[in-house]
Image (cartoon, one colour):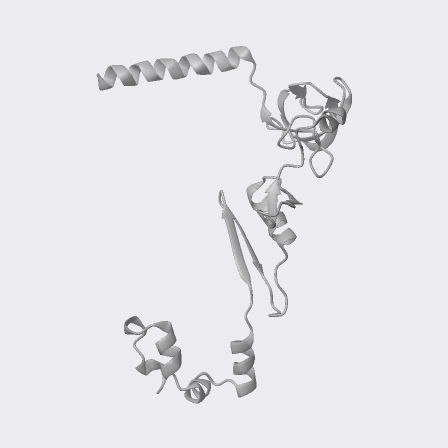
Length: 203
């Protein structure tokens, strides 16, 4: 039976492969028996990660190798921009690896926190001029001025907790426009006006 004779829509995949004559299939696609067996035996791993318009594919070419979990974590971080740290959970109930935060709520972690006004590293990507550099600022600041254009840039924590550096040693990332109290108040007032207009329209 040739592959053209089988109606895949009416049969399950298992039935399809049970009924296909492998020798005829080999002849029909003009591959040697060794090449066909090799293709049938190879089971490559392929993973596709997609987030916010960014797509990354990982695959193995050797059936003996698997994609390591650490590689998957790094790929996730690249695609999503989120930082993860893998730790082992040693409880009997939950013996598998878990994705957790590296900052535990104990006094030792607070002792390692930088002192206020101590210089710390900042990963700067200025939203005003595009200046991309590693720089420093004082710990505890809420914004900094771009060394190139002088505009204010908001300082967000580089890790998920305050006072903890990320895996590259940065305490802050600066890539958003700083909005002071007046800017936020204007935005809030505008939102309130829009809500009242919508409520009037719906009433």
